[in-house]
Length: 246
Image (tube, rainbow, N blue to C red; front, side):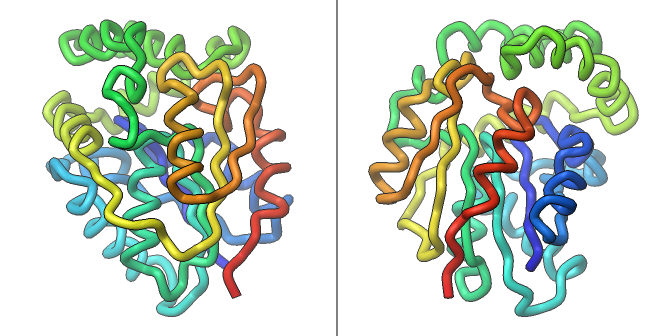
């Protein structure tokens, strides 16, 4: 069983830190993190302006990294949850479960999908070339834990300096996320994990999507948008009993 991990807007495999290796140790799975075009190992490429285009690239990565027919569990954070939903539809024969972390969709208003307080930091980051300032703004948006923010600032700056996500690719990803419509519910069992105190995306987005998908939603009381960063242990506990399709 391969667990496929997908990150969100402007993020890449490196932003998982040691989370995937911890999942492998605790869940007995093989973890694979795929990068969006325009980020991570593909940072020199142009990002598509649709989630469907991003998923075409993800499927090519799957063909190269995972044996055909190997069963999959998809774990998507934020925009990665959109990609996971679309990928589950495209790979329905072998996707056995979905875990969506702080997702959003067009089932909710735009100001719920990106809360008002996050608009200005996002705009500032599109106009600012200073890596330290940009990553500090991102951490303020996605983490509610000051210790986590201090711990991650330096490594996240190093990631951006080593594999910079171009502003044009951030804009393309924003267009992809804002235009994405879920055409149907995936067949695979789905669980949503969300943060009640998410400062970037309104928790109502998770609740609305859970109702639409008729799936379970579990809430964390204190963590921020980047739930694995703020409380990896809690997330791993929620992954232990994810129901799998037969």
